[in-house]
Length: 125
Image 1 (cartoon, one colour):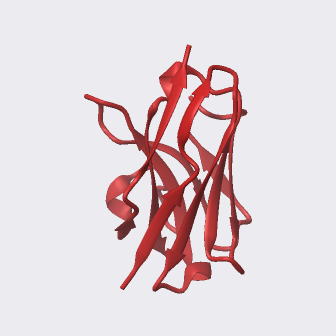
Image 2 (cartoon, one colour):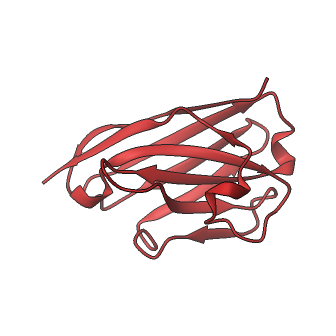
């Protein structure tokens, strides 16, 4: 069956960096659009960044543009989220998600068929 397993979360001070990884199995990874979402306590799940199956195009929420970078390694079936200049408002559980082929709206959670279990990111002031 399909599994998405996130790792790399943790506690970091404001201004610091973290790199999240999401290892996929059970699917033809290179045919899937991938994305990162996050959910803070009491808030709805929100889009962070997305990447096309080939990795040629990326998309970001305005709140993270210029600070976060999404990338993928199709040979390793892994998608990454490099997070720099982290702020307390970035504190959330971060989830990776997969959708078959490219999609027309990377920010819409309903477009994604598969989700990971999430990894906690906590940024202290």
